[in-house]
Image (cartoon, rainbow over all chains, first blue to last red; front, side, top):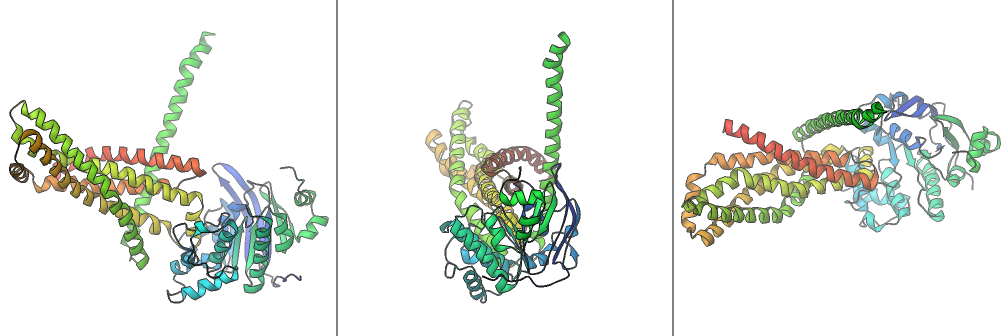
Length: 255
Length: 274
């Protein structure tokens, strides 16, 4: 199956420059420099505790980097206040590791949540939009169900439907296939590709899952010792990347 | 040799104790600062124009915090009123002052016992519930998700809960005042033979509006404290299920201690101004 090619672009959609993060006195990122191109699917790899999820949370403004810049849409996100972040979060959304569905809301209300909160759709339009998003992730007609009634894979897909509800330009995936069986992992990988092709969204994926690296991404980057050790197409990295990257991709890197 | 023993037995524990005390004091000040910030954010959102969702969430919390706490409040107040009346019927009979039972029961209940005990019991129930709910949301990243989806957790979670506490606590205390006095009246009649009509007359003659108002007004502050402390603990829960347990425990202990301390301070202030 031919992979959709990322749109040619000179300007990165997300430009992470010299990000340094210190949390509770511990240096998480020494210096991160990474550019994400429009329409591409970029995977960020790295050992557990290396700060991959922290970087995602810095991009969407849940955490602030200690130093450095994160450029998106002509704004430095690292300097934005909480209220200024609201319009940014229409364009960047995130799929959380455990899906983070609201237990007290039905599937319909979960997917409708960002549309209601951001005033993007009236109540009469919501059924159509929610159903459209649910069908994009292959879950039409489950709006009346509650999160507790769903399997792990379905929760992730509902989380994805909620993440694309506002038609974002960038989706951040935090370990999208963690805890899923191989079938659901493959399904999520296909969905990431499908959304990239269908709605042209840019994907920034944090994962340990090598199947995601080789089936759902255009480029992979390795976060090692608080820095980006290498970045490039995964096959290229495996064939001729730095030793640590090849060993990481082969599962033999010293952790 | 002696120096080592003195060092180990005296100086080392003292140094550790002083350091521990210092970090606890710093932690306490940080907690007060964070609660003050949360209170300021709450006031800011309270003053904002409310939308339909604000009213829906507020109504849901009024039901959860208010209606579901009525049973606890009624049982607490009825038995407190009955127990106080029982003790006073026995104690005052020694001095031939049984006719004062009603006045003293009512005075003790409306000024002190009903506001404090209702707030302690309802506060324990409501505070632990809020901390557990918001703490679960925090450890499963639902609060982060809320922010990431463009919602403000202070407005959607803290505002309806704290405001409901501030309204529910005085309402439940007023009901508790009535039920406690009625319980006291029944026991006084049974134990001392003081007629119900006489009891009611004694209560209405001796109680002033200020007595009831000062008791009820205190609970607005108790409610605000319980709500803020519980929301703060819940939202800041870290460390999975262990962290969740600690958050609930910390909420209940802190809220109850704050109610007791605040009760004394507010009682003094109200005695001066009312």
